[in-house]
Image 1 (cartoon, chains in turn purple, blue):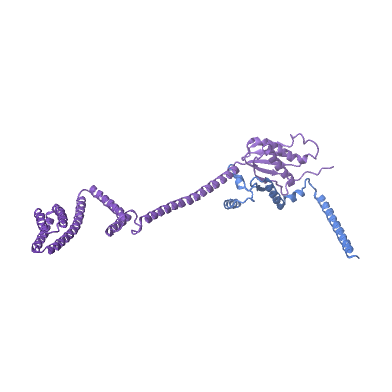
Image 2 (cartoon, helix red, strand yellow; image 1 turned 90 degrees about the vertical axis):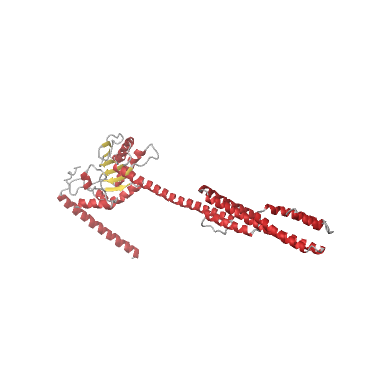
Length: 340
Length: 112
């Protein structure tokens, strides 16, 4: 058949004067024929039908030269139309091939199924990029939109499918930032509150124990003030004597009544100086004497000065001051008045 | 009953004005009996403030007045009677003198 066609064309076109254009068209037809041969048998059969029609027309209209040329042109146009049809069929065949491959993949084992899904996603990404390069394809754009929605749903359910990728990323960043801020804010305040509580607990726990201990283990300093003499005694909380002193041993208070009024101060200071080495932490001053308060005040201050002398900045150990002066209610008979 | 009341009061309120025995667990009687005297707590080591407070307490309690009126020797009842009469006469004399001085001052002020 292929041999017959060029022979027919050659023989018919050689007698007429128009030899060059028909020759080119014949070459074109040869190439097209070869392409058709490669196609399946069904397409070859269709081609035979077309060839039959064309041949019949040529034989009928072969009488006049002008009519012959026009018919040739029409035949060429029909051939072009057939070419477009074949292209469409090719596209369909491609789709069928893709579908077949997908089905085969689905039929196979699970790992292949997973791989195939990954491939599908990769395809969608590739399509997106390609379509970006080639905007006019409407179908491709639709596919991209679907793929975007699927990807978005998989990654973030809260996100909108129609949003742009950059906008999506911005939203994600915003969410992450807000989470970080919330965590930092939530963490800092409770810690400050907790530290405050800890500090308060430490402060509260420290002072009462401290004070209670001192009160429990307080030592006593008894000052007994008589008219012309003074006794100072240091004892522990149970009454055991640690140290004692009086105005008698003092050398400078041996003459006259003018010096006896200072006996209390002097004695208290001496005993305080001695008591420095006993390691007293807290002291309760107990003053006993039927005298004016001025003298008692001086005695207490002298004891403190004697205790803290020599060491500047030392803490005052006195925690309580107590006056235990007592007078009986119509007690024993007083002594007889002295005759002068 | 008084001791019980003191214990209850001690439980509910621990005031610094009422002197109470220190926490000496070895003397049971000292716990039951209330201490006598005036006690002041030295707050923050400020001894002068504590002494000032103590002086005010002693004056208000009347111990200072007792100290001024101290009696060191025994006096017979007859002697007390005589001393009382002398004091009375001294008092009347001082009142008359005061009245005279007052009249003189008024007369001088009026210019009579």
